[in-house]
Length: 108
Length: 119
Image 1 (cartoon, rainbow over the protein chains, first blue to last red):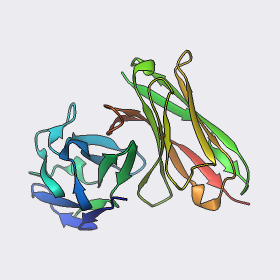
Image 2: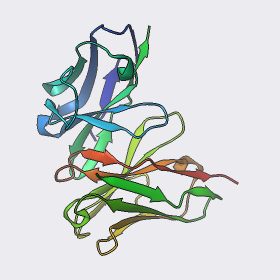
Image 3: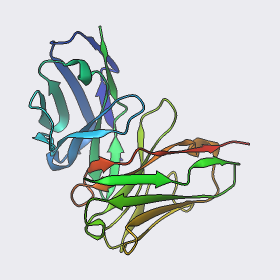
């Protein structure tokens, strides 16, 4: 079973700063099946990135994804007030999804 | 626009049963697989189960295998989750979620329905 470990657990930043979130897999995974989601309190998650680096429909270009093998990164180039939320990475294998534990991006 | 509306959540005693429904609209329901994903209070996301677009295949997390059953009625654009032998650790918000492509990730989520297992 592949385990996704996200770091840091919490990221304290100011609006306008750059956020770099990490997702590490316990074994090599296919980039085609690595996604990122944003979740705000009381809301359902929203797909940001799929295939490790493709932005979902309507996602601003300040969000970008990269990585391969076991190490993946979600970058928010300049944090907007609405970007403070929890972010999850997710992998797919054998018709099953696995989520990382999440990174909370909070206002410093 | 795509809409997924869950219903059927509530409070149930340990060992009890509950059936969740998810009404879909705004897309060709019969062409897409659907997932159930849950989130325990204050915790992260946990994938529960997936059903292919035609209902031909279903997949389950080990934590619910043998207790939960996913099904769909494409004539009614509705997804179901039958939950039996419920345990306290099944307490969570349950989201139904549309598959983006071949089960690999999720592009639309419902707002969720809360299931509480407690005596």
